[in-house]
Every structure is written in structure tokens, then in C-alpha cells.
Amino acid sequence: MKLYHFPISPNSRRVVAVLHHLQLDCELEVVDLSKGEQMQPEFLKLNPNHMIPALVDGDFVLWESNAIMQYLCSKVPNTTLWSADSRVQADINRWQFWQAAHFGSACSVMIFERVVKKLFMSAEADLQEVAKGEERFHRFAQVLEQHLKGREWLVGDTVTLADFSVGSFLDLAELAQYPMTPYTEIQRWYRNIEELPAWKSSAPAAR
Ligand SMILES: N[C@@H](CCC(=O)N[C@@H](CS)C(=O)NCC(=O)O)C(=O)O
Image 1 (cartoon, helix red, strand yellow):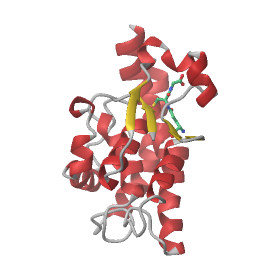
Image 2 (cartoon, rainbow, N blue to C red):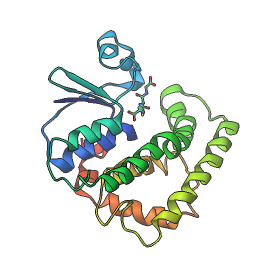
Image 3 (cartoon, rainbow, N blue to C red):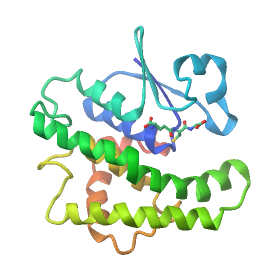
Image 4 (cartoon, rainbow, N blue to C red):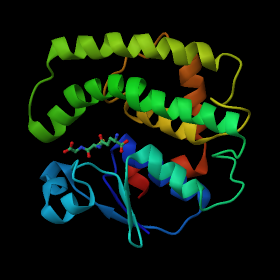
């Protein structure tokens, strides 16, 4: 298998973390977004959305990070990351969809305005956009904060794909200056993720 990724991308990192957690062999190839490599014709053949991550497994090509994570779990029978129980699976799915549709998109506004623009475009953050991102962040962070009260992990009593998906966006919390102060449960839960060997070894500097 080969995974096309970009190390600081949360969407990439969670896939790399799952590869490490499941101890699967996979070649990693960097698509340097800062150089626009995602627009190269060879990469566009793999993912016409010009986005990483993308996985190639023989003649099968898969894009969308959450779909890739689920596919990787299908290679490891009985993994606790992705349950065989339909309700537990639906619950994990719920958080992965929620991340893609709501929480991640709120975080992405601040990542784009405060990190991508600064590092790759030498441009200033648009404060109106930042304010919209923060408002959206509070709306969904409150849901996450409430859910985490009395829980160590998002679903059940062990780490699952749900934690890797939602948690991946916390990686850039400091750099993108998410308004994290009120969210002590989210901070506590993310510290659990930071302690996972697979999370440590998937850190941009560790790869
Ligand atoms: N929903 C996609 C989002 C992937 C995504 O947003 N990738 C960004 C980096 S974090 C990207 O490749 N952007 C390059 C571009 O839009 O040209 C997933 O979960 O895989």
C-alpha cells in the first residue's frame, strides 16, 4: 500500500496514526501542498479533488481520510478501533461524519486563516473569517465538551477511529489559536490521545 500525505495536515495525520496503531506496512509519499504538488496530473489521476490523503492498494484507489481509516481497519480482524457491533460502529461513524461536516470544518477556518496563509501564502488572517470560524467552533466544541464528561474516549471504553478523527484537529489548536480555554474536558481527552504511541510516532517531526 502507498499513502500520499502531507505531514502537518490533520486529515493525513490521523490516517498515518491508524496505520501505526494497526502496525500495517505502507509506503508514505509526501505531496508537498506548499509547492502545489497536489495539482500535478499524476496525482490528479489518483484524486481529482486535488487533496491528500489518498491511498493506493494494488489497483484500488481510495480518497477521503475517514473512508481510508475504515478500510485499513477492515484489514485487521477484531481491531477495537472499528467495532463489529453495528451500534458501536454507527456511533464511531457518527463522530467521523460529525468531524468531517462540523467540527473539522470549523477548525479548518482558523487553520487556513492563521496557519496556511501565514506559512504558505505570506498573507494576513481575515479577522471576519476568523470570527465566523470561532463562532462555529464554540457551537460544536460545546457538544464535544458535554459528551466527554465522565468519559475517557468518545465511544465505549477504548480508543476508536472516532478519537483519531475528531482528535486530529486538536493537533493544531495552539498554532491556529482555537478558543480552547473553556473546554477543559476536550483538553483532558486530547492529552489521552497525545499519550498513544501511534499518535506520537505520527507527529510531523517524528516521520
Ligand atoms: N475530506 C477530506 C479533506 C482532505 C483535505 O482537506 N485535504 C487538504 C489538506 S488538510 C488538501 O489536500 N488541500 C489541498 C487542496 O485543496 O488543494 C478528507 O478527509 O480526506
